[in-house]
Length: 170
Image 1 (tube, rainbow, N blue to C red):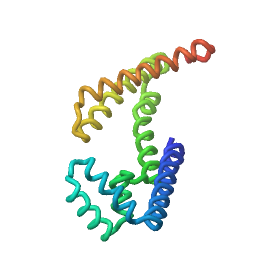
Image 2 (image 1 turned 180 degrees about the vertical axis):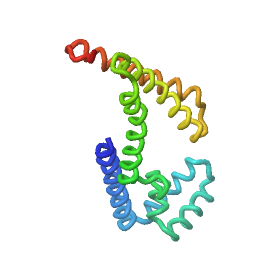
Image 3 (image 1 turned 60 degrees about the vertical axis):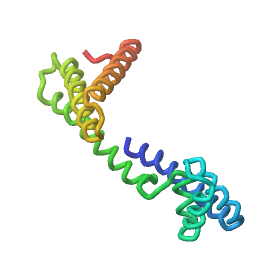
Image 4 (image 1 turned 135 degrees about the vertical axis):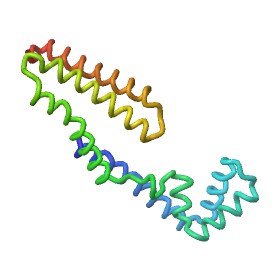
């Protein structure tokens, strides 16, 4: 999963770099046209035309590429793609998520294993959903319900597919 996250976010970073390179070229080729384009962006955001033009000129004079990447492309240092960070976060998240089911396999007797792992996993999902929501300022109950529902559905579909192909553990 971490490798997949790295590849996915690297692709996003490549797209961002290509967009920035295109803007750099457009700024070099047509600074007046790009200033007008930036002015239009600020007008659409609610500034009157004179103020929008003044803001555009000031930002273009300071760092035109930074103004464009932020205000036209929506790319900032805080929001740019970071493949290594995404991969590490994914790896830690999946390792943490596997901890309870793995501990359950070690502790619970074999006859109760399937039910214990399923129930323990759903409880852990509910707790992690609540923790994540609380950290993000969202509703812990709503997040817990969502991850528990989708986790249960995924487990059910997986078990159903296993039953169809005769690979259900017993």
